[in-house]
Length: 69
Image 1 (tube, rainbow, N blue to C red):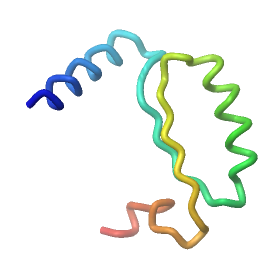
Image 2 (image 1 turned 120 degrees about the vertical axis):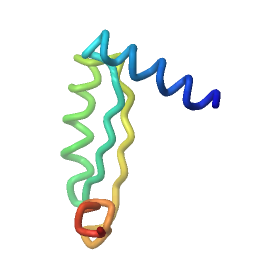
Image 3 (image 1 turned 90 degrees about the vertical axis):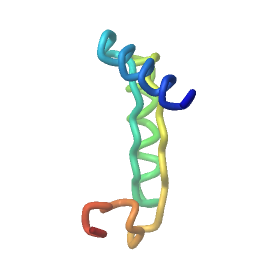
Image 4 (image 1 turned 180 degrees about the horizontal axis):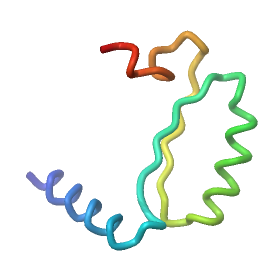
């Protein structure tokens, strides 16, 4: 219940402040250095955002979750 309330609060805050939020990205390990540089610049511009970066191999289903189901 507390998690739902915290998520609701976060959703409301993100709606009120479009410069905040949660960004989840999955990339192939070959692009790790490239995406890291991009995220550093993005984070400087959108400091209220939180980032979740998953680096996987190219055959990982995390890169294309819509193919799973």
